[in-house]
Length: 140
Image (tube, rainbow, N blue to C red; front, side, top):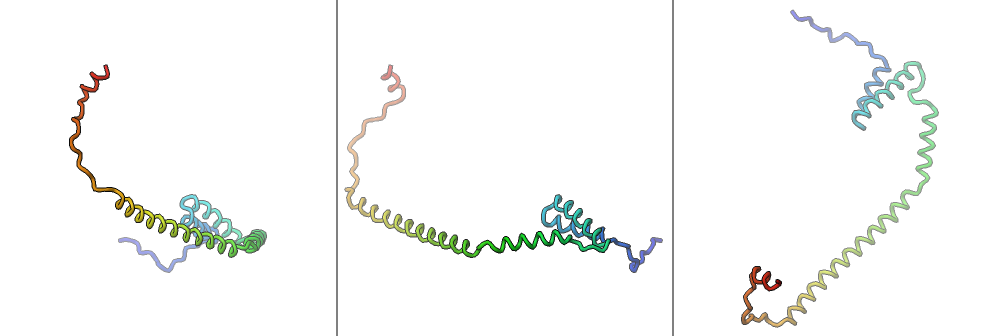
């Protein structure tokens, strides 16, 4: 008979292993196989720090991230975006006007040329086209 497994048995899992698996899964979703390796390593390091009683992310890294966020927030992004959208709106308006002018100009010139041209006349007779051999002998 087959052995029955006990579903209530707990498997010991360290915080380092849990961090490595979580980091590998998150890294693989973000950056593929390379991200899985980097994320697994970062998760293992964070799990090890938590197991030792330290915070997962060092205080220096948190401070550096906060200062970088402050510097980015100082850039007047809204003003730059508004100016770019205004310029894009001007470009859209000018392209619409020029295409409208071109199509109306084509219509008027077509009407004028049709009015100027007389009806096509039939040619009386055309001389027969010379054969290649005749033109080659004429060149010699």
